Amino acid sequence: MKISYYPGCTLKLKAKNLELAALASLQALGIDVEEMDRWNCCGAVYSLTDDDLIHHIGPVRNLVRAKERGADKLVTLCSMCYNTLARANQLMKTDTVKRDTINRFMDDEIDYFGEVEVIHYLTLLEEQVGWDKIKEKVTAPLTDLKVAPYYGCTLQRPQDVGIEPMGSFRLMTGLLEAIGATVVPFNSADKCCGSYQVINAPAGDNDAAANVINAAASAGIEALATSCPLCEYNLGKQQDQFMAKGKITANVPTFYFTQLLAMALGVNPEVCHFELNDMKAVQLLEAKKFQVAA
Amino acid sequence: MCEITKQPEIKVATGDRAILPEGAKTIPIFVMGKKYDVPETLTIMKAMEFAGFKFLRGAGCRGGICGACPTVFRMAGDYKLHFGLACQTVVEANMYLAQIPFFPANRASYNIEEMSAAADAIHALYPEIFRCVACNLCTKACPMEVKVMDYIAALKQGQIDKAARISFDCIQCGLCASRCMGEIPQYHVAQLARRIFGKFIQPRFEHLVSRVKEIESGKYDQMLDELTKMDHETLKKKYVEREREPDLSSLGAWKPKETQYL
Image (spheres, rainbow over the protein chains, first blue to last red):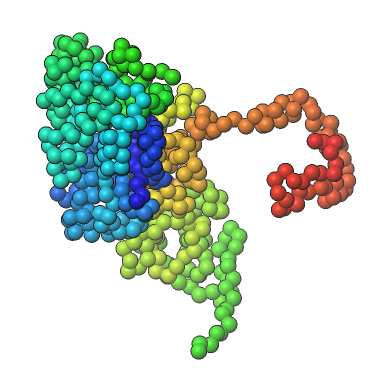
């Protein structure tokens, strides 16, 4: 079976810490994925306008590229890329009229009928490695770190493309427990982080994100694990402003779940690029005596 | 069995004017909607000149490299648009065409000395690249077969080196921008990417620096003096008799017999 890897634009720029930690972890686990040689923006947000097919061209073109390379599966990391690609794939599988229109418009490409399966990195880990085997490979368990999976909106919605059903956080919980962390459930793991509101709202005005941090803090959570660069930005990088405006009273640093995985697998910490996280995240790891520098 | 008859030899018009080959057939083409009968085998540019058009602008090198003569055309009865350079594309019967010598695409101004290898500056100067929906009409329009959409995608990902390499053959004709629903001036963005690549990313060639130093130190002055003082005949003889590396010799295998200049 051939698995193609779709990185997504943000992972090459602002969220290198999400990607590089993920790829190093796969290497440590002996899983081989191949980055697509040609890929474009996933489309970022799946268009819900019924007759707006042009905004599906971006994600479908990536699926075509994966098919061209003979991939059975396309694995992604970023929650938003996953959502957009998986939904476009669903459209190409099920809506034959729109599929034909899209295929006709893309007359420079081979026809696509939804042959490639879009999966998230977490699903790949469970299917190809399994939590038990990951546990065996852990060399630096995250003992005594109280962490909660934060799924945000796009990993589970809508149900037919979600990585698992609403209300269940089985995949990331399984992974975090396998790497030795203490998983603390809380009631806001699938609440919205405020998403793109941050573009128009002044810094520190994003109540949605502040609410999630408060809920985590009162549950005794020390760190949040996410797979979405926008969630990471809204939750992790605004806490000073929230504090200044009195919206939160305690910090809850955010990490990409891949950084925690890589750390536990004993990957060189430089690969995790903790400098791209908020300083609070680095301080927490140092206080817990985890290795954050080579 | 079919009988092979001798094909009439087609003389191709060359030179900078339309030369009508003897016995050439004429074919109808439509320039800006008006019909003209022009000799076959001519390029679009020469056919238009044959028809009486005079290029004051929109023509440059006439060699397919300056990007001044982009043309859009369509064949009668087909909806498909085609793109080419007027100085390179040969006319076909029932071709509907128009020249797009200039496209008013946005070009940002910047001081290259203040740029860096980071993509953020490109994103700030050309935020419109994020309007790309991957429709690929830019690539379809490129007369140089550059994968335009792919280099825009690379720049969105911050991969300036990749964009510089993909866009290397761009001749700045602007046809990509003319087709873009996102109003992206692809060719200007690519030029900026190549400039940044050349200045901040591509490794400096150290042997070039040392060679320039040698030249400046006067190492070659005497040889040059000898040559400039030589009479025409001796110079000509020296040139004809010069040692030359064989065309297909493998890298580093050939050494000249005369080594005093090495």
